[in-house]
Amino acid sequence: MLVGAFARDVWFWHLHGIDTERATEDLDISMEFPDWNGFHAFAKVLCSLGFSQPIPGHPEKFIDPGTGQKLDLLPFGALSQDGRAIIWPTDQSRWSILGFDESYQTAAFLNLTSELAIRIATLPAMVLLKSVAFYERLETRKRKDGADIGFTLTHYLDVGNKARLATGVDTDIMDQVGGDIQQASAMLLGRDMGRMARPDTRAHILEKLKLETGSATRCPLAREIARKVTHGDFRWARGLLARMLAGMEAGARHREAMAQ
Image 1 (cartoon, rainbow, N blue to C red):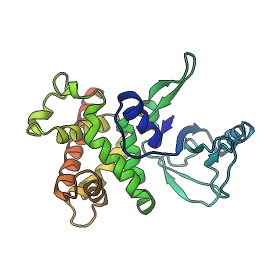
Image 2: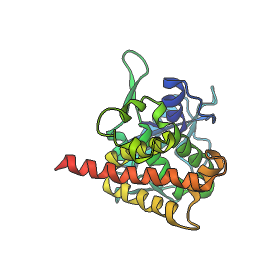
Image 3: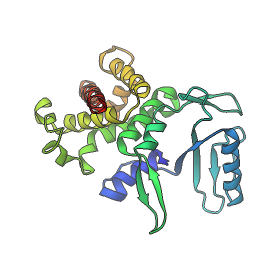
Image 4: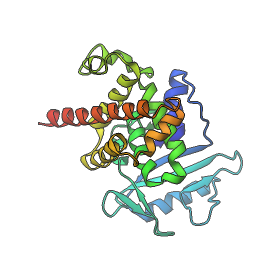
């Protein structure tokens, strides 16, 4: 499954002509593996095709020496002991995999040729994954992930979703936000996140969003969105996250009602 910034660019730039304002050099591919032997076996396949693993201790990082293309291989699946995180055998570091399973299950298919397609994470899935990564690796990831979350939050209607505000189950959103397009975008994105997220993923992200919208100090995502998206207006940034939070809770209720 294609994830990361290049997947973001596929949705916004390649499919809808929307400039994301931040280029990426990496390809992030997530794959489900039964165990670490499966991961290492696939790594050998990549190396047999010409890729190298240039950074000792980071078996997830590959590069094609001929083109300079960088590739990160992000595993999930049964190699996790608890279904929530993987422990890298090289240094025993812990990486959360919350959100990967439902992202894979709800992924779209991107046709590469007439006979070949690859799964690509949807934008709600991307924000789920980036929301988890943002807090887990705050100092190294906050600017990139914060900018991507903020961009998707405010441009979600522009990728074919605007019509959903006029027909279907989400027509109440515009009344709730008083006709504000950015708030509507944030709320619709939150609803789609809530509809797809597993309970443990949803609970984790909702806990963070409640701090973002209610805490005096524990609000790094709101600060990043204010810096990058709302022209320094922290209250506006926090308000957008509050709409996403409300949407996510409503989406979760909708999912539970549909399951009954």
